[in-house]
Length: 222
Ligand code: CTP
Ligand code: CA
Image (cartoon, rainbow, N blue to C red; front, side, top):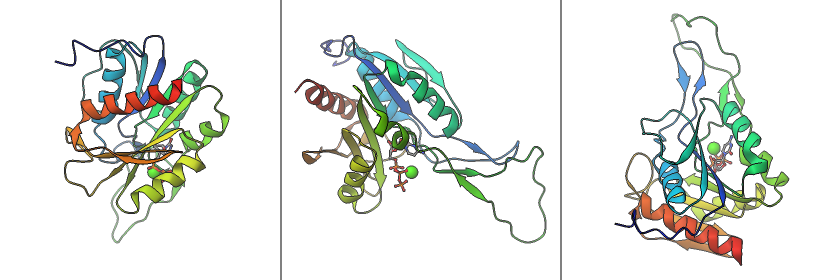
């Protein structure tokens, strides 16, 4: 029902959303990734578009249908996501980083398939760029919303990200709470701002998306 009766309260606001996992190749056959399905980010892009925003959805590989009335920017790696976000940043008013960006990638990508040998192997990894960590200190007019997935010390760890990355809000979720996290259609999140932490009840990801956008709208205009 709420899909047909949204007020266009984000009309003219340029919103960039990142969603889904990144994939970091090891060789032509294998890659490192995570369990992100993109559902929370896609729900945010859909909700923002329905509320009249100009939405760019920058996303890793997902099984989801593109979101209607958004500009679709598919990427694969953390490096590509970094380039897509930074190239859109000057024309972005609100950046919501819901993507699960890999923190590390194989230091070397083999040209040929790595063949099995006797015994164990290890893979040297290097850091990927921290997209929000780089962009946060450079923001001008943009509202920056990060996500934070934790399994312990949710508020403490997420508040540290707010400060360290110069963000305006962090949407924190505890992977160990029932109904939250990867793949499911519901979520339990805590909105963390410089004013403190507010835990929202268990809701559909569509409703969580609207609650996040409500909070952003309120904070941008007051
Ligand atoms: N993020 C990013 N670039 C990265 C890694 C993360 O922009 N290379 C963003 C995520 O999209 C998220 C926020 O930073 O919005 C926090 O991500 P998270 O993984 O929770 O925090 P990290 O800073 O990577 O710290 P850690 O994984 O050690 O908890
Ligand atoms: Ca991380």
